[in-house]
Image: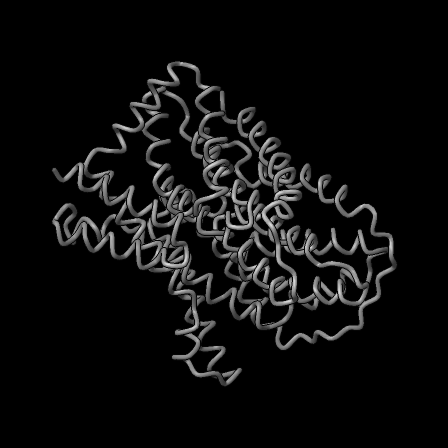
Length: 422
């Protein structure tokens, strides 16, 4: 009975995520509450199903990213990059590259909010539509967010599940890791962006308006990144050190804002992305319930039966099913549900689990670039465009998002297979 109930709640929740995306946090927490009330999962099991290290990384980096964004350093750098570009095409590609770099260390939505004003200003000055430019910024942010442990929630989920530390995203067990797969995908997908913007040959010249408010947040962010890299050698099991460091730096950032910027502490705490924080907690409990009731083993056995001994087919299936599904549903709950399935399938096939886990992250993270609803950064970019009077249609987004995604996924997919299939 518990097994059927847990699956019913899980499937109902995911269906609701698709049809009521704005209510996803309430749905996740409500479903978790039903599982607790029905005693399908106990309070203790629910507590331990939540990966508190991942939660610490998410909340801590959220605060650090917030003060980094408010410092206006990224926006200032964006202006400098645009002013030095030879023409509009070069400026747009430079902005996309900058958005990608920032999003490797700052959450994707924050990255779009940082870079968007520069893109909109450039479009107004040159009297061109900002639609393609904003779409390109959003998809570039989503792509590079998968490159590091702190770039985006899916990366944090993978790190927590596979016990991968910050350095493991660069080199893992002596082999090039997910960072290099993403960067190869970025290099190939950049050709797509160059093709899209190749016709813009106007000379660029923006009047500098951004002034750096403080370099301290940049120092805090860089220090956190360096300490996370160093902590990789101390906490090889990815138990709690990374989350603790991020929370400490988050607290330091909050007090810096209070005493240096003179902003109310409670207001800063209240303004954080608590919706996504509680959504993640609910998802951990939902996935924990289907794991405890045996559904993960059942699903992996079913998929393993379809795949048989053909590992390449299995890997391809995982990557491209992830791409298709994450184009329409939130990649966080999808990835959280599929990570244990991928691990179980790897064990049944007797292969290195990194092959399926990395393929899953690539597919789930990049598939969201196909549609305007596939990722939070896309929704935010389209929302900013709507405020400017531009309505983004599904086809408008897919014209850039689909070829960009196919190029990035194809390159990263082949890289992971070559490096990790042996």
